[in-house]
Image (cartoon, rainbow, N blue to C red; front, side, top):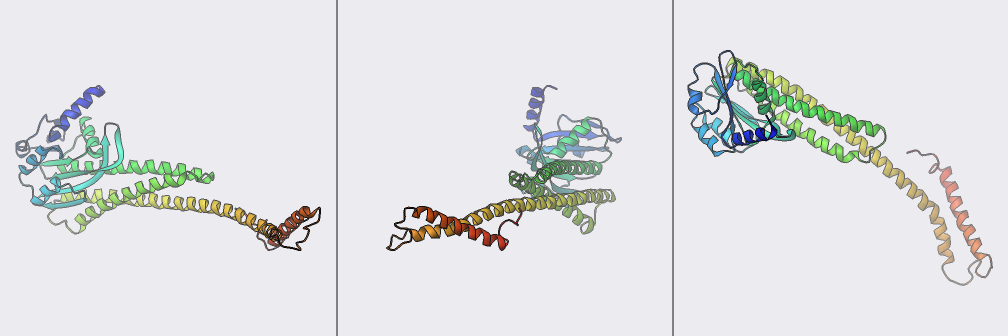
Length: 341
């Protein structure tokens, strides 16, 4: 499809509350629905339906409020603008909010959007205010012919795509860290402080999101699993383990970034100390000469060499001698000539 036609199609979809919808038959094969109403979900006797909503459209609220069997708390989680990650279940419906990488026409961005979902044994309803990487990736996967046998499997695949996106962001971050480390080993730390600061901020954001997802999955698995179907509980456990591993990797990247920042700080501090050391030596060597010139600048009677034709050169000699004696004394004390930076 030409880029212009694709843009027009996506723009047309974004003007609707339903961004896209698919019906899955008993074998897990998907067929796109041109439009999807609440009756479509309620009348699905076999198979299931996935509906992805544009929550910025006011018609999404009407769609959700007419959806039967949705607990009030689940409806509020879908409609509220809060970005707090969460996951709960009630009356056979699982709902929650996940952080995901944002998606635009140029591809995935290292910025976060939030994916909201409602899951039952007959449908998965997801929604977002801004396009997300996981939903778009799953849509392309389904369009390519991938079969999904149940709503819980679709939910697990969606969560895996969220994890894949964050994993990719961490891989890009690791590559940038390796490049920064190589430059540091080449003693080129002048431009690394700002770059490492940006990387650490990005890593902390990813780690925070992963920690939040892992916490809510773990809480649902251990504390709030009563009433969950075995299939959903098994999916939650698998997804929880995946996010736990990613959280550990993100923590390692953040710690590695912090260590590199410490190395940059040490190099910059060492360079500053070297410059300060040179200035201190120069001040120490010039101080006796300043004292001599100050003495001869008193303009009082009986100053030495006042009327001597070579008095100026005698004064210069005294300045050089005073500085030389100072240098000799500092050298014997180890203040110069024995330090390395």
